[in-house]
Image (cartoon, rainbow, N blue to C red; front, top):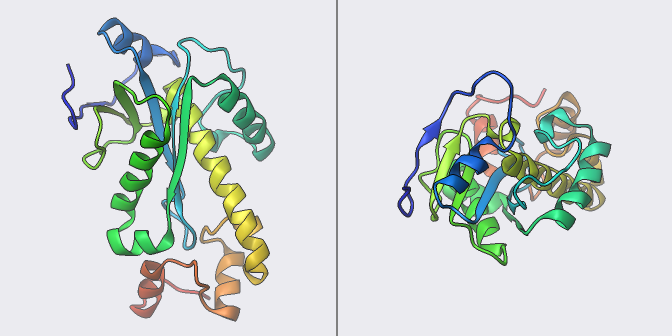
Length: 221
């Protein structure tokens, strides 16, 4: 059994990916409500980190479901609508640039994940967390390294988080058109660095990035 706040990590899979393997094994162990949790936006220079939590009906048929990073924007947008329709419960939340600077990106990610879990109308018996650390997650949880490509629930969460953050940054592009956020979503692309060189950081750029520039650890040229 997994105790409240406890975690263990699964690193290996047998050949051939069964997207419902972990959900199936946990169901056999007696867990009735299993959610996948993933984030989007840990690496950008600007904007919030988003997280999503998703409980899917076991074995739900969602053609094309996969790690969001492997999917085109068009496919992610289509699957977003399918997932929120099929899901038993889902929650989407974020931690903004100020919280990232105050807490650091790891703890801000935990904050966004906890908010996403709490936003669901049904709280899970256990949460499947993408990655190898979950010490800041407040509910029962289990880490799966590379989980967004191994678990249907985590893959679904990765899509909701990615699409939600991309939409948010597209909205920010309207407020800060000089940075072209709609193109790079705040990530450190060549274009983004060029815009930073021309205009300096905006209100939504992470101060941790600015400090890196001041220390010479990051460059804007």
